[in-house]
Image (cartoon, rainbow, N blue to C red; front, side):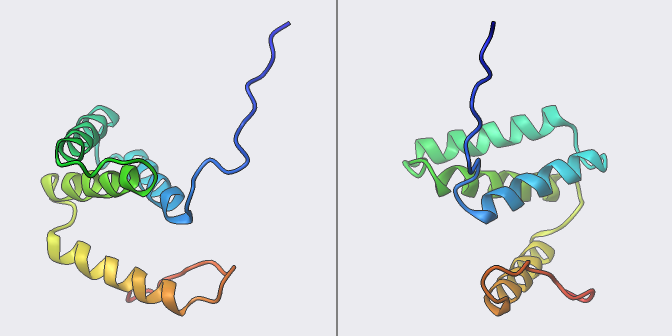
Length: 110
């Protein structure tokens, strides 16, 4: 009889790690990039961070994840640097204005 591997109680260390993961999966499912294209872009971002000494676990992995996603969005003409910067600023503002424990949401204009 085989035993099931226990699942971690919390698969992501931070909520934003889960959000970055979910956003990437959602954009892939919408057909904006292939999974091979994503994996190659993430591998390049992780290798660059490792060479630069920035890959030290935890947030570093998901920081590279976001850099890869931004790069892929720009390369594929989905969103430019200005659009990405504006969205990141809107999310930061919404996050800081959201009471602890409540979901972060953006206004339709945001």
